[in-house]
Length: 588
Image 1: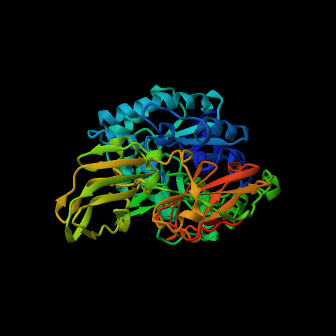
Image 2: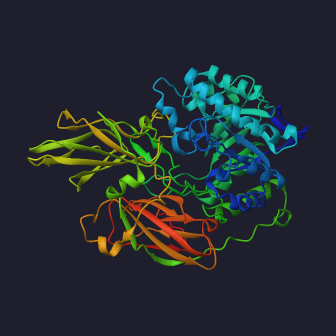
């Protein structure tokens, strides 16, 4: 049994000084079959600790229904790390940010109109307490004080960037202790006055997060904490990408230099990220600074380990910095696992098709309402939703206004595409209604809830109403499309439907490819516009011709020998009908 302590500006593990060299690997962004590979590569780089968040929305996807299996088996991940000789830092905050959907908060929280997030609000804390009653007893036996690998646990996450409710932070801290947490507790915040004032808890270890200028960051930290050890809990050695923007990279030598300066100062460091992984499914988050910006499917983060687990120049530079600091040689580190095989399977024709609007009854149960309701108000968390109503005519030269769309809407009148309305460019659409009236259909995509900042409360769908000029339209039928099971679809031969009235409309496309030798592969979507891809029922995530990402990562464990199924949900139709399975990533 071991106990990590913070005393006299240093960490002690069982009374002996230790410098924590940690890397973030999120178990929920890596298929479980690859956990060991990623952890071994962390250890082979010279690290002694792994850090991970725990996303509440993954573990309680439906209220009072808990999930701790498969991708969500955090206990297995921690035990595996411990068996490989790594310490574990866990951050089980109700809120995690992490560029993860809603910052890890469950979308079903938004069904409660009285709820206030991340503060001393009874409705919110009742939900947190119930979750912690399920989660924390799973972590307690894994603490180092019980013979397990967990040496430290975080209270909330970068709270000083959000609020000043110290009573709330203290409530969470006391709740962890009451449930049996007896390892070192800590907070993490940016090295700024307001953040360190709002986010820290008296008597609890504080850490700081930054990507450069360590001397300045630690100097600011020392103004507040004279006795705490120096620790950068998030060393941002790369960055994440948004759709419609270029792919981020950072020079390996610069990353290693900043890291070496922290090591020389005696600081402990946690790389955020060491291995980023993938935002599978609809788990990507979004930011809202000047406008809404959704995070892409890849969470490569330009990390030392790439999205598919390959070592990079940054990995080698970081390893060299550790070797220089510790006085070790490369042959004293554990060996690297063998590289994971990449496989090119070539082009795959998606020869079957199912039009979205004609298959709505197979996918959804209709909900009627006077006004269009956000997803959360009808029990939907992720995916898409169709709003339908009838508009009287004639009306000429009017403008259709969606107030407000979260996040992207395709508008159809009597089945004819009229245009797209985007949250970041919410312009009205010119609409003419014939004398006999027309059916209006609006397909809205939830592109990911905001995960950081003051716009955290982010309902999805149509959030207020739809107007023709200034007149609100009433009497709506809504079709929730969580897309959590697309196996019920009935497909037809795409060649017979490509030229019919459904051409260019939202549709599902299906095809198969054969696998003899399994390997990681990358599904390119050249010729497609925007949508989602499933392989053997696993939601790989979103694609968009706007980039930067051009290929979706397909880990080999998702494949099977023999026939493999691909389903693409394409929003704007395609004349291509072909995808390519390449052996190379393409992040733009």
